[in-house]
Length: 264
Image 1 (spheres, rainbow, N blue to C red):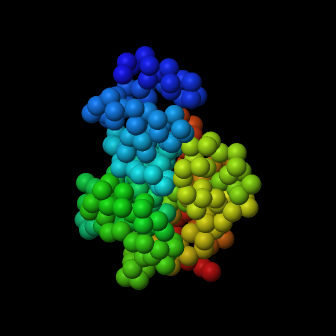
Image 2: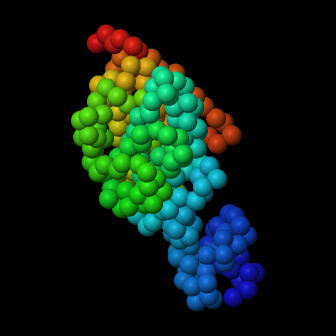
Image 3: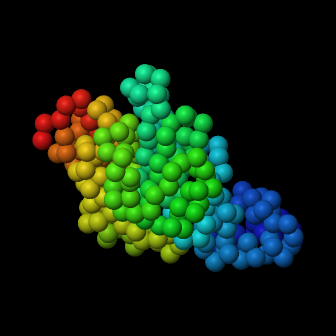
């Protein structure tokens, strides 16, 4: 099958980066028959990442599969912010192992970036399929299946130095406006953030103080429009909030710091 034919079919299907996608599909296929099968899946609207079986993230290739949330480039800001706070954590400065949790981890893009960090890394999600991918991407992390903090071992209470989460933040009535690749191929639970998009952000903030170590931080990916709601939830829970943004990747992270002493 010629490269020109592959590009033409991708263009006809509406793929904006047809030339680049054609190269990746051709690299992934070991025969014309396999290339035809991969191309047919992509032309039918399946995300390129699940067709290939991987998604690029901070220079890594993360394992993804059908039916899981595919990491976006904007989440790289969440990973970089996690690494930054990890480097400055009191436990790291004292020469002991910091504790990091990636909540709503999906395929664990943040945890994957911590493989060589020396931290004690945990990752949690409600999706067994996502955790199967996470196991390949972050083999050193302890993985937990369950709903938010219910998934975590009780022994982590009061010990978490960095808790990072890319919880869903699309308002319910906006899910239908998302690209078909997302709304038709990714689980709704990974997209729908409730009426204003921050239902899970409020739940994360509400119980964070009990799980964070003094000086620990809650990092939540959000949008510029929703950041005030996310930081308000953090402030209401006793955290000191601020926002980190990166216009280059369209990322926005709400940061909530647990003070050394908390008045509730």
